[in-house]
Image (cartoon, helix red, strand yellow):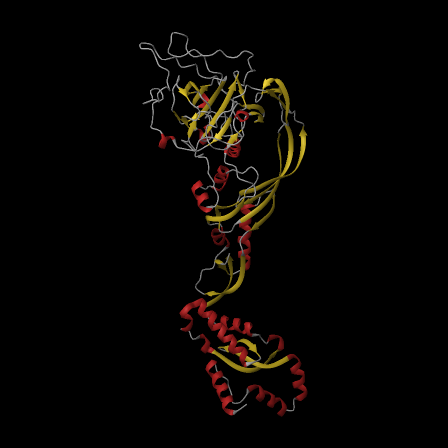
Length: 599
């Protein structure tokens, strides 16, 4: 090595902190050992010690290192990290000028690598402090002087969601616990302060996979979202929801005098949401928004619950009844079973629930229903009154511990959607009737009567003739109803009959229109400018026909079909008797389940 090159190196070392004494220090130390005749002693020392450099600040050794280049690399790294942490202030302290270098003998196991020397230099900076930090998904949450403080905070957050039934409690976030340098003036936290930051709530987006039985309305309820927000987050999906916002009766048309506990009412509300809402295809992946703490917790729970075992429903043919008619042969009774369920929750909100096993404690008695097979006269095909899905089917079912009967079908549709007449006929009832709310009943020439319940508006009057497809009312949620829909019911021979057997397989209702947009507001008792021929002519001086008696209480189960056919009604407006009383209105008692009404 040339003298000029050695001189440049000595100057560089002095600029970084100074190299004391002339010449290469390691060579000088070796020369001293040889000159002193200490070859044997040097051999022994060389086994445990090494000739090296020591970096010191004010006489305090920071690190030992073997090569000059080790210090230079460490110094560059330390300067860069200090600037990253302290910003421009890192250049104003001159901490690197306070480091001095010297030669020494040091134990070999204490000779440091580059990263160790870097840490030692950072330790010498008074504006930095070595602390434990917690990052959640890459974001710094806080710092503590002890790692135990952070561990205890994480445990306390888990305890919030841990129950006696918990199998596991896990964090969905990426957590990072590190021992690193931060500005010395940065606040360090105690356990309680750290917990407060970790449980701070905010709306967060997640992916959710639809489970069997999920409905759009129940999903909105569960995650406290609006239908507009759900649609905004899922623009490729059509997620129309029935408006179930609370109103009179809690938004479900439930009687105010129900003697139910808060838990029972919550269960009933969930059942109605599932039964009346817009179904989601299982497996559909949606983006949902949920208010969650910063630290998102997923729990898995298992619990054994005892519940009613729904009885099996059996059918048998009855050739004495018309097709679509039903009657109970044997009442069903519920059994009892203990079920082991597994529930997955995120931040306390259930995501899925699975029955793992069931043990029968008491056997149930099957519900046996006879269904008619006798054919009806030809030409009995009706038009669907409104476009929408059938949210509640016709027939018997076992619900709330008893057999209930739904005497029509419920067709979900937005509030105000026009309702069309299913066939040509005459209006025999138009008004308010108990749990039906606003109801229209049409009498048809083929012996059928059709019912349109829960209307928001009635656009026809008693005695008026209507044609198939004519708008007669608007979809609503009057009476005992859980949301806007049309209750459509058919009766033949004064007995309820399954409407789906007399409707086309595909919904052929007119295109959806809003009554408010298509028709002017009319007084049902005195419509303006009725179509010519809609109302039969009345003789001067004669009174209009009396309105028929209202339908029977829909909570009464249907009667057996009468053998005789009802007599033809008298023409209104003459001297004869008023129109006959319409057939008994349908009803299912409280709790039909499976549809958009609790008739």
